[in-house]
Image (cartoon, rainbow, N blue to C red; front, top):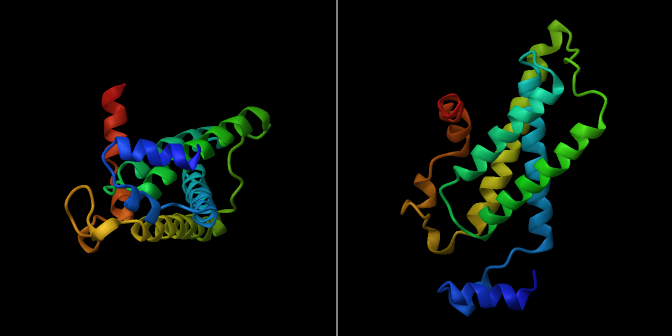
Length: 175
């Protein structure tokens, strides 16, 4: 989208032009966020695949988990919006890969003696992705307040959101 048009829309929604000019996400930030989303998705997918499901099922579950994580972020700012955009863009690309790859029906071939190490690697990827996203979002918090009225220091940790399995219970209720 065109910068001037975005600025006009921001003013239309009640933001000041100075605030809009002061807080813009640049290409470097976008690249960092895109990479963090990819790392987070990789960790979640590996963790899901290690549960004994097919790769396609692991990816599909990971789409839902990733989406739930980014929409549970209690901060509304430009970085959060971009994280959500990057998430949907990553999911779109992965769905294309799902249709093109011959491996979606395969189960993971993890030697039993390496399962713990692979799980640890998945946890590490998840934590790294969450940490990068958290830091980038906090760089864009104006005045240090979140939409829930909490300060960044009291903001719920993303890991707690990830560990919360409320989204699984919600999915069951939807069915």
